[in-house]
Image (cartoon, rainbow, N blue to C red; front, side, top):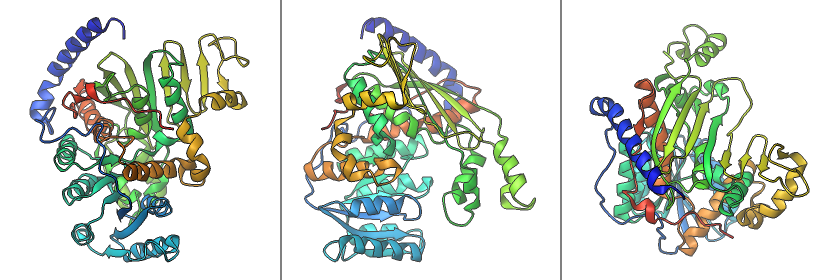
Amino acid sequence: MKNLDRRNFIRKTSLSAAALVAAPLLTKGTEPELERPSMGQYMGDFAAPKLEVVRAAFIGVGARGPGHMKFFAGLPGTEVVAICDLYEDLANKWGEEAKAIGKGKRHKNVKLYYGDENKWRTMLDEVKPDVVYIATNWKNHAPMAIEAMKKGAHAFVEVPIALTLGEMWDIVDTSETTGKHCMMMENVNYSRDELMFLNMCRLGVIGEPLHAEAAYIHELRSQMEEQERGTGSWRTLHYANRNGNLYPTHGLGPVAQYMNLGRKEDTFTSLVSFSTPSIGRKLYAEKNYASDHKWNQLDYKGGDLNTTLIKTELGRTIMVQWDETSPRPYTRLNLIQGTKGALAGFPTRVALEGGVEGVTKDHHSWVQGDQLEVLYEKYDHPLYTRLNSATKDTGHGGMDGMMMYRIVECLQKGLPLDQNVYEGCFWSAVSPLSERSVASGGAPQPFPDFTRGNWKNTKPLQIIS
């Protein structure tokens, strides 16, 4: 990029100022872990030895876990060896499902573990799987992933990868010392539009990326009905007790890869964050539950909507919003602005300087709706073209199945994963950093560099065919 020396100077002086502002918070508060010495091999472009048959165990089959298990079990060269859940009925149900998918030829000896919160540890010791898929409540992600790697398995974790910066460093250290993958399963990176936008960015269609907008706007108040089992039984407590951007990765993951953040070109440096008042959950509880119900005994601290602004090494910006409370349509925003045009989502739109041939004359008009077919035909990502027919009936419009296909394919062929451990930590770090920024009145918070400077030597994510 042009003016790099000037931008580096601006970045360094800005980050120094941010660190000075944040210093009082960092010395008093939790997690002053902005750096750690390296303890093992760098995992940015790491490719594990090939696994001809991938033997997998699944922890948590209540919500997301069953989908992961089914997509995995249907792929050639896979073996479901164990399923673990708190509840016996769930473990039995999905163990039988795995055997049915195998049609008597595979997944024949699925060991089941249930009834105790530590049964997953017993499972790791007894089964010794090649990989472990973790789809439990958020607080268990880091401990389970770390222990799985220590026991010799690659870990694949639902979002977020961890809750605290300390846990994220522990995951990085364990991955580096054991030589095991730990990938946060950000499925949105495999959506058709996100893949096409990635392809267009790599081809230089929008010029030099400058700014992005990402979000998880998804009204989920109805999950409060899940009071004994299910996501709402524990996620509601996060809304009540934490104030920040609690779920950034669905929107942030794709735009971070458009910009090559944490890979060769650029990386995260700092953020500021602000939340609205906390009103919606309290009103919902008062309207739908008795005054003595447990949801009406909570002091809801988390703002209904959080807006976080990220600054990168090269001076680019990313706005990340989160709101699971307000009544409005779903959106991830998914906007990337470049020097030659913009790509945006919800609805999908494209505007290019000089227009799109045969559709628009200039950048003052969006290409959208049926007009997009000309762009899909020209810029659809090769991975989508190759795998869509095989995965289109899987979860979330096919993105879940495509993600699982790529995980298994990379493990079997000995290829680097599409998302490395550091990306999972960078994207998830927005949550604890945003909480600290909100608590300090919007003070800038510097990002830890989980790569310890090695991002400069990490290859950009390739356009896989």
